[in-house]
Image 1: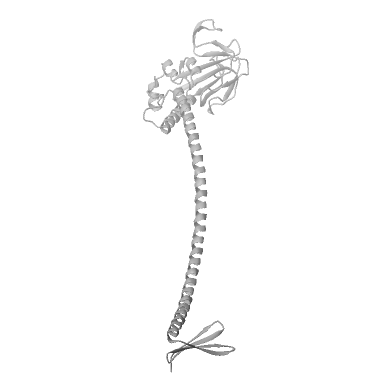
Image 2: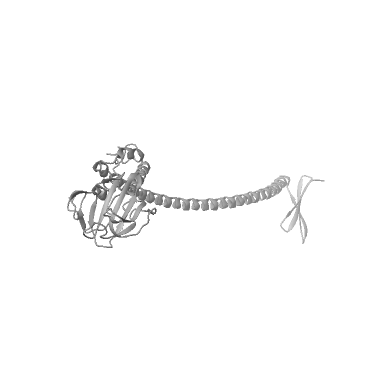
Amino acid sequence: MEVLVVIAYSGSFFYRVSLLRRKLVLTLTTRHGSRQIFLHQLLAYLLLTFVLLSGMSFFVSNWLLVKTHDDLTDLERDHQDLNEQYQLLLGTQQLYISELDELGSSLSDLSAERARLVEENQEIGATLSTLETRLGLLQEPVGMSLEERLELTRMAARQRLFLLHSIPNGVPISAERINDSYGMRMHPVLKTRKMHNGMDFKADRGTPVYATADGVVEYGGYRKGSGFGNLVVLQHNFGFKTYYAHLQKVLVKSGTFVHKGQQIALSGNSGRSTGAHLHYEVRFMYRPLNPGPFLQWGLDNFNALFSEVEEVPWESLSAMYPLNQSGAQ
């Protein structure tokens, strides 16, 4: 009587193990036929145990193989993901390196630009100090920034340029020399001592005559009975006037505006005169002034006029336009 039957397939044949009356019968079946082998009971148990263990090993091995294959697939997938992440990190690193190089280049450019600006600021500071000296301002006022000093200098320059265009200054003609200055003299025609209210510039006929300040033409033409001959009178700001006499030709009309440096006439020998020259006067409120300080007045000696010409009340003008930081001299 069979107790246990195990049927298995191995390679190209089937085998069956049967336990029959304390004997183990092993039946092998191939394509050539069947064959039975009778084994002793102990040997039969050992063989049966081997067969069972082999079958279990086969199934366990297959399960482990399948699981290992799945694990390998997962590992390969993880490896691929890690490789993609590595490539991404590598590209990001290259991008960071490129950005760091660009940042380094930008920092170098900024450093060079900063050095250039520092150099320019030094040049501006030196130029500003020169301008402050020319304008009569205090150099490097305490507590003032460079921008504040620039604004102060700009305002002072505007005020001085405005006054230099409003009040007569500079020479009215390119002359050979000054024949007669301001003051008492022996009149060359009348032969008597008379006050000479202006300056005479020796110049050939037809020499251009220029306005010494902005203004309006009060008179332009021949002045009878004055001895001036052809005369131009200009009205300027703050009550100043200038006279240009003994002209050959007047080039401006009464009531028109003229600017500083504009040609207004040609020098000549008209009126009471012994030779070609330009008679030039500066007046304040109809009062003749010595033209000398006005001829030499300019930006470099801006404050000199206010101390040399005492006939003008400069104090009231300094209240409107500060002539320097401490007021008019």
